[in-house]
Image 1 (tube, one colour):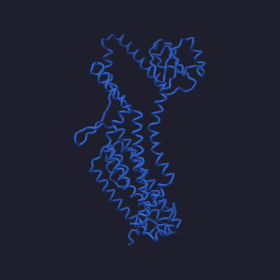
Image 2 (spheres, helix red, strand yellow):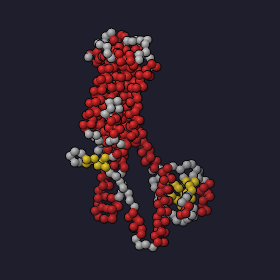
Image 3 (spheres, rainbow, N blue to C red):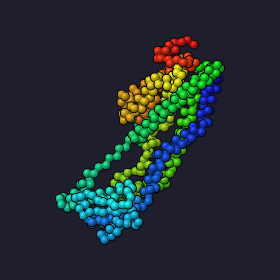
Image 4 (cartoon, helix red, strand yellow):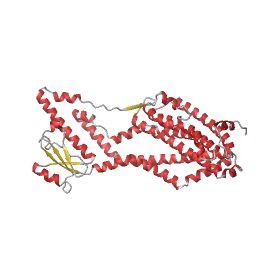
Length: 449
């Protein structure tokens, strides 16, 4: 046991002290946070930049009717100014020139002139303002032509907007806000992380065994340590490296998450808004109806929904499935690496081992869409796919007895894989110059210690 610890410590310290490990561990959460929050921050910052748009309304239907936004400021011009503004867009104060034709009601088409392609915020605001105003004018014209009393009110009553809010009920009957989209995202991320960790660190074990065998270093090590001690020390050492990296990621992502919350959500402003809304709703019944239809802040809603996720359960089960899945695959990879002399001879043995991992990633999308289906159920209990598929299902809610059965099957399979790998490793690590077959590997399992 002491020799296993020495090998474990060497494998662990050698890798965690590498600059590449430190850089990858620290930069990955920052990169992930950048992908999530930087676009929103930049979009919010850029949307505050004002763009002045000249408008020539040949139809005379929109004069004074177009509302400005943070990114777009409309300025109506006369016909005699049109050519001068159009010819000098590059040098004058206008960002773009909007031309509204006389037959806008029938044509449903306008022209925007600009020296460069206009940005999406400006384009969307122009679309929204023109479509909204044009729709209102057509409705007004229809109401006047039909002559039906209260037609506009009746048409307004037909407009329907459904907001689906999910509430997850706990065993004590209490409810927490949930989100299918957030559960899908967390499930996909957890499953893919399991796949990535198992594949990366399992490959490290395989390459380490291959290098030691090719360099004949293993012959020296075997003289002072048993093969099983060497194999388990290497496997457990790399498992500790993976756990260290994951725990650092959890701490950093938690800090980034809290920092992003304080950056994007002003708690005092939200509290004042809630108080003002309650006062307005209590004083005016019409205002109350309007306020009920206002969509809540998306970021605030996201943080409320994410609080309904049981992260303690997810992190704990992630560690369990990562350890068992990693031990299962890394022991098989170590056995294969010990049985061959070169990486080229490894392909015939590696394909059957990696196919289940790849299959789990392939069916991952279907499992996310239907986490309660038969495919998801069986794939989360088959030991070669359960570490990935069960982690995809857990954010949606899985009964504890299913989780326990899955872990029990995976643990039993892992111990069986370690036993077989130790048998193959003991014989293959000192064998050179021969390409073993599957039949010969089977014989090695029957050799007595």
